[in-house]
Length: 385
Image (cartoon, rainbow, N blue to C red; front, side):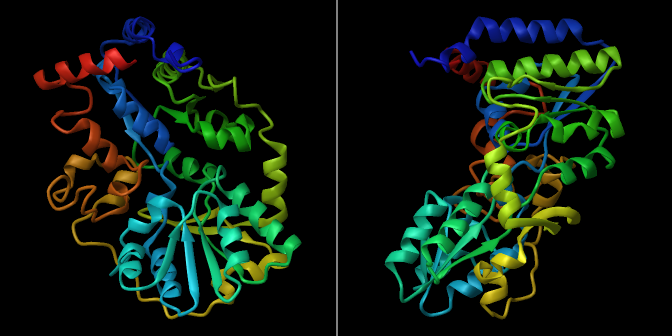
């Protein structure tokens, strides 16, 4: 038994919540909910949450995977820097396999570039301390969850006077993307708001969703019971016609967020316009280093020629990120594009929507329909809940 885990995967409790959701759902109406966290996406598919819900409750995956929303021009720049002799690129695991316009970090490493996978920003800083003859560049990719740890490494590098440590930053913030999606072409009735991000920025950051857009929103945890309870809370808001901000994940998330992390972000970064894969440039949706830390900014300090970016032909990752299409609608999905041979970023990341569909939803048809093969799989899933 795993304390604080098994309780949130209790089969009978999950079934009871699913029954309550179905009972509260008006037969003639349909509801579209979107999660904007890659960990939620994986959990929803892993535990068969879609198959537990009524057929007229549709779950969509939004831009919740930071690797997926990072555009090719960032990857191309990282590859160009990696090719400079005496340079060490350090990166979190998923980024190494993401295809750029014509190559990937994995491929340039195979060709001789020094590209190393690290588990933390401070590990990258330690490499810079050990490899004093090289310029060490950390790829700063992630939302508000990851950015404070990168900020901490920058502050620590200055404190220790490590002169060869740089960050190529592509950090993004979630609220501007939610604003775009709220006024977009997809009629999203409610949002399953991210848990990790919310632990940093706090629940107050989403107040604009019900106030300005009339959208229901609930911050939920990642376990099956968390997600199902969050869906029930959203359904209650929607059916009552009273959208508001609620926190299901109140064992972690506070209204004010994490003050220490937010102070670190404010110390090192400032908001800037930022390019999102498939979504274009969103105003004030990215984080760039403030002028006082410009000497740590790899984009400003390391000059390279970056190839013109282009997306792989036939890949619809940009549409998948926005919830406009499901992965099986892509002609490359599961044939040309697989986790072994990813064509697009959404198939690479452990939080990517295409990767989730490929791993857990292969063989299922539609959003909530369960095939005969699924009944066996769902039985196996219920045993692990």
